[in-house]
Amino acid sequence: MKYILTMAYLLCTTSGLTFMKLGGDSLHLTFKNGFNFKMGWFTFFGFCLYLISFLLWQRMLIKYDLSIMVPIVTGLVQIIVLVIGHFVFKENLSIISAIGAIMIVAGIVIMTIGK
Image 1 (cartoon, rainbow, N blue to C red):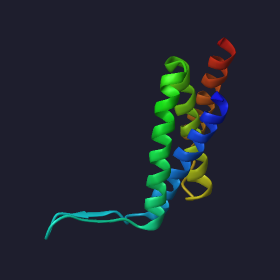
Image 2 (tube, helix red, strand yellow):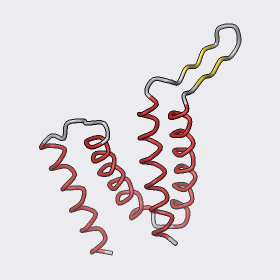
Image 3 (cartoon, one colour):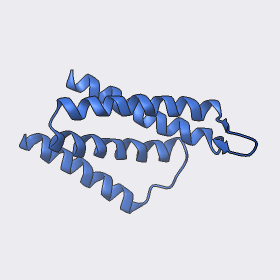
Image 4 (cartoon, helix red, strand yellow):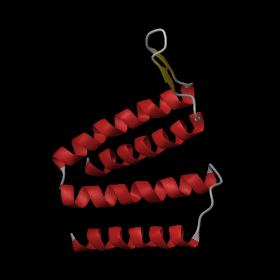
């Protein structure tokens, strides 16, 4: 169950971030003539996925070891977002980013072997 919950969290959080970025600057909040709130569909979908990921994260923090889950899962999120940024948004992948990703993977491997 831990792995299914973790995979669902990773999918929701990275997809949520991706859709919010795809939505661009579509979030508008104004207080002129009352309260006005508008959001594009991509941004809204991303927001919903990110909200679901928060609820999953809350459940994971309660059920599993905090000292293991937080570094591993946040490291995986960073790597997935780096890959999405490079392939989906055509962002530059610098040598420093690649070295950082390798170090994150090495840290995750060390943590899982040590457990």
